[in-house]
Image (cartoon, rainbow over all chains, first blue to last red; front, side, top):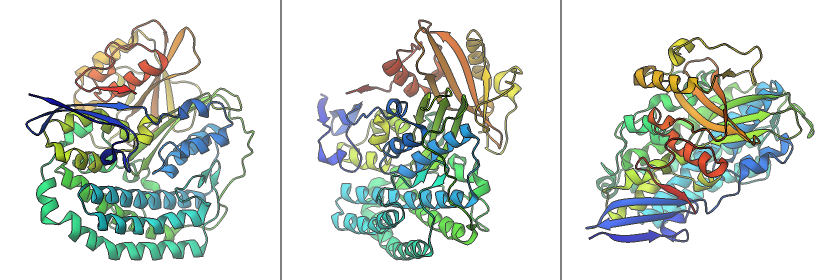
Length: 368
Length: 135
């Protein structure tokens, strides 16, 4: 006989590190027979609020949409506004934006491993992951004064110019992180206990990932190599970084183990990208000054950016007024939540939060 | 499965040659207006073409602020280097919109979101084996 289990929005197992949501599970013989989700506990109505403020200020709200991927959302929205304004941003700003995105990706993936370590009972490893992440938070703080990267991207470029001291700190943080990653492998990802538990757990096929629009590392763990915008639409910036730098961070099994391992590959890829960007970053201005009262002509723009969890898309509309006429975000986490009840069906009750954490969902972005 | 490098032609993507606007919005977005009655024909075309020839649905939304009408935006990626497509249809608010999730299953989320927040009505909002509700 099925028993109902309700993981409420204040249940520590699920909420910590993800955001507020409610998971209702029907359990039968220790297995999940049915799962449903309640969302919206953290809804801030960011899209509607963005329509009440000037264009330049709307970016501050985009930053808060997913607090773990602030630069990706503000970059997507600022790029959409810049298209409406027909603004050509300086080349140096494009490079700094790309560096910020990659730093944020590393930081977000380290947060993912901290969550994963916690949910597998590896509390000391969680602290080590957070220690490594702190270095990247320090770098963000050094750049824009916010540890989560709020306000790093602004209309017309980036908030500040990149200095040699900042580059030095990034290199130092990446060197320290690379020393830590073998430990992460041996203690968690390649550990026989974890491998045995996660291999074959809650697999997502490539076809399913494609049909349900799974994005980013979740899609790439299922073999969807062309899901990475950095190597497709934006390869003019990323693709020429260095010889041999292709989208090798792709696995095919699509199970929990693949989803856990792929982010490690992505961290390494991101660090190589940052090194490549350092080598090629041009000199020049980091920003075009755009006033607060800027009014783009009527029109629409749609921009996609590869964030840490996948493709972040923004539709922005101007009606020739000082505030945006329409702002609509399409994020990757919502697509995973949509498929979550199907993914969870049939797995052991004790694996529920391991699977949820392996998908790296941000409920902050789902609720908007 | 269609690879990114190959860009679909507009004729392959829509089954007809759409009239292109004199001026678009942003430089990387191609806006195409379609008659609402054509949406069903488009759905039939997308159903008939295989997975290989299906454009990717990147987003589905309506423009806010309309009282009696819904301005539907279908955001499509045809792959390759060309612009993204915004297929626009101006439909009366009380009209039942077609179910895009029969072509792109993930559109279910956006349809449900639009039903909850804007009152737009789709033939199949919610259901489909995937359940979520707003707390």
